[in-house]
Length: 144
Picture (cartoon, helix red, strand yellow):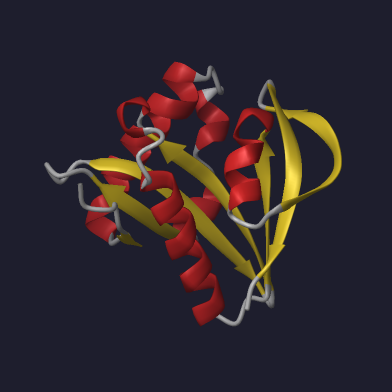
């Protein structure tokens, strides 16, 4: 099996990214549709991973704020979870952050995904909290 890869999305990929996020966050997790997409989407760096048919199966976004950045909207289609697509997206987001001079990234991890982010070098900071009806924890990681 070939390891999944992830690339920066282009304008023509945004509809497929939005559809994946709607499936994962709105349909599967019950996030209200009016808060799933926001104004930050227009200036975020979006990354995606495709399956062997070319379908977008994982995505995430990067919001750069000087030397720090936020990573969010990490989503993987249920059919590919545990197969490396999410890790490929996260690694690509880290590369894009470093390319833009970012030295630290932060994200709001769903508690059930905490181990995934810890394996990628993140550390939890602060207490757990509710966001969109789902328990989250803020996590940070320094970048080289």
